[in-house]
Length: 311
Image 1 (cartoon, rainbow, N blue to C red):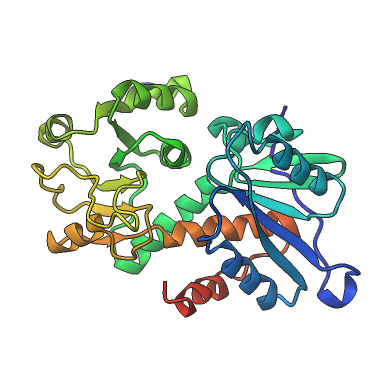
Image 2: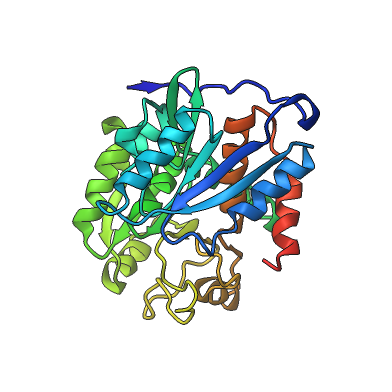
């Protein structure tokens, strides 16, 4: 069952609510997550009492009972909302009652909450990415683009939301995966049939990416959705060594630990503008916060919280 994005009732201030808010994160592992930092900062900035906990839930089948229990706690009002991260963005799907349009299209949920007697499954990664990309463009002084051409590295779970956001914004996508068939399957899953022909599935290798760059069409954006370059393997780079980055393109790496990934460093060494994935982390968290509270998220306070953490 799908629905348009529902609106949660506006939360009252801490003085007008009998119980503090209770939010949390389901995933495995979760000990490294910055989500508690962001949501605690948001609660404090808007004057709400509450807490954000982390719930390590192993992959299925081992974690099935824990996953069901946590969703039951949301249904019973014990928890006001949960974020969902790897490896449960798809395994949570059978446990929700209603998917928003975005979550249904992506077939992945990163936010759940109770509305009436229904558990709503939402995906804030897609609008979070779109907002973060625009913010990165603005901060870097990159020309405003709405219908450019992008090379997207990786066709795993993180790529779903990015493909959805880019396609809905009018971008042409060259989706590169180690197995091109995986890229084709992702495009078929996320992109409506009438727009499918404008996008291309290619191999994540020097030959296919080199051919893409030599085809004559300008590439305006390169996005890494793979974990390559993430700590502790900071020397890895998802971009093929033999191929120069496209001139004048903006480089966006979803990885944010380390802050200056190998791809971001390569981009800047090549004279290109680049950004990491911290902005997407903040923007998706802000939209989850709004689903749970009905209050506009204090974005600047959330960004500042990451600065205070040294991020």
